[in-house]
Amino acid sequence: MFPTIGDLQAQQLVSDAFLQLCQEEDWQFLITETVLTTEAPYSTGTVVSTPGSTAVVGTATVWVNTWTRKVIVLNGTPYRIASVTDNTNLVLEAEYGGPAALSAASYDIYQDEYALPADCDWGRDLYFLDPTDWNRLQLLDHAVFMESKIYAQGILGIPWAVTRVGWSTTGATAPAPLVQFGPDAPSSKREYPFIYLKRPARPTSLTAYPLWPEDFEDLIVLKAAVEFAESPSRPWNSRFELREKYNMRMWKARVRHGGGAQIDRFIRRRFPQYQTSNLYLNVRYSG
Image 1 (spheres, rainbow, N blue to C red):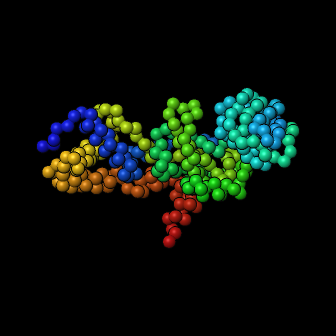
Image 2: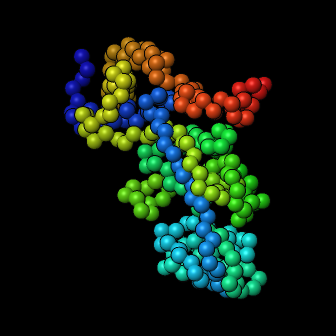
């Protein structure tokens, strides 16, 4: 018989097992689809700024105070916006470094950083599909991505890659993961199909679990039992039998609900155009 434990310890064991299992496979029931829409740049009016100053003053502009972290291109150089005071005044994160003062100059304001859904498991694979050619945007390491942007500073176009850039708390009740599009910044409003793996929240009670497939729910309890039985402080005599039973259940769950190609299969079923994209065909028939 399983040794007696308290409700709090049982809840902790089951919660830990639940979160660990969600990380071990690309489970079908964690795959989530949404749309991320990029914004069109803004360039109405003209601007004035002085070298060594972070202040930018607009004429005939209608800037919005939620444009924090957008980018303004002044004299061909991009500057991240720290804050927008009102329709005609904004503050840069870094001083304007142009060779001369700007007067009635043209500009572009664009957004290249976008918040992902709060439940997105940001550290795992992220799938953005180009809505025109259905290629998948490459998910690049941040250092590689920034190196590629050296040659696209302030340039607007069609992004072909994304990278993880941190977390945003602006206008959100909980931190939201951020990605940056590039190397060219988005030059228009576009709707990108976005597929990701959900990161479930830690359950607050033994009854606060999502409605997963029944065999997966059994697997959670079994994994919790294995972790308890194999604890160095209280090894359980039947732990080897329990581990063998868990391994068998895990294998069956992987066959039914897991596997590394689950997301790719989901995308091919949901977006038939993806199968004819150059990226998909190159990967499928290479080597």
